[in-house]
Image (cartoon, rainbow, N blue to C red; front, side, top):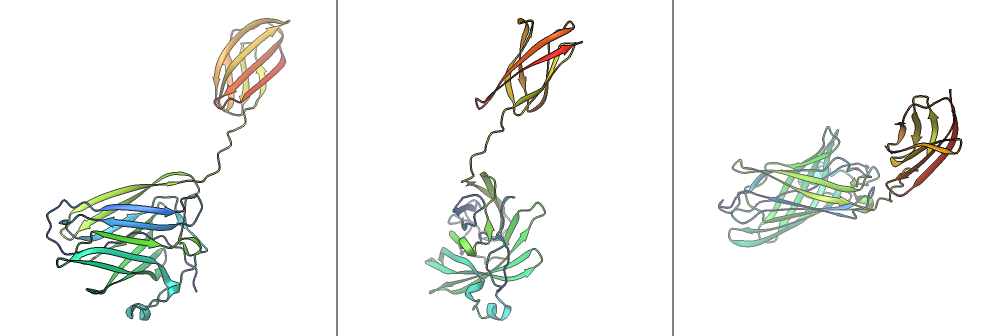
Length: 301
């Protein structure tokens, strides 16, 4: 059995109907689970309204961040098995279901999707569908890695019939082919459609990746305090903060000045000082409530 990474999603069938509605296919994506760095089951649904033109080409694009699960156990269906519509279970990526009306009759197609070939970063996909009333239908697609790191799954030369709903469910867990991004947030899946008559349409749907551990805010530290004759106080902060610089001489306050500082090197300009020994006290408070204090003695010459 070959171990192969791959990203796949979405396919479209079609059903015959006169074109009268605006061509506007819709895309839905569901991940289970949505936890970061987890190999999910992926369910994609492409739907159209009655009267729309059938689709000829469908391309579904995964956002950057989704990557292959390198441990996915997926074999390749050989050409002889594909020709007999007898791909082994080890090559199965998931299942497919289509609801349609063919020649005025309701029809349901069910079947499986398989990995049927690998060429570099391109993966050939084959879907076998069956209807007790209307027989068998095979659909071939391709999943390819984009230069930006995302994946495009494309099904071209689709049958000239309209599908009201097509659902493709890809396996999760050990057999999952994708791994969720490591960063939590909303990720946008995009679809591009071309009808049998050349009409163009797009759709997109967000999916939220969750389960990331809470980020630990940077620790607010305060140090490396220097005082110059020109009255400039230099210091370093471990995180952005607001605070006050107070300068005293002989126990008496010379001046105090508020500041808004950033993580790293900062400086606060005061007034020119006379030669002597000064006490510099700095109090800083971060946006999360952390507080840092420092009190040092410096000599100005």
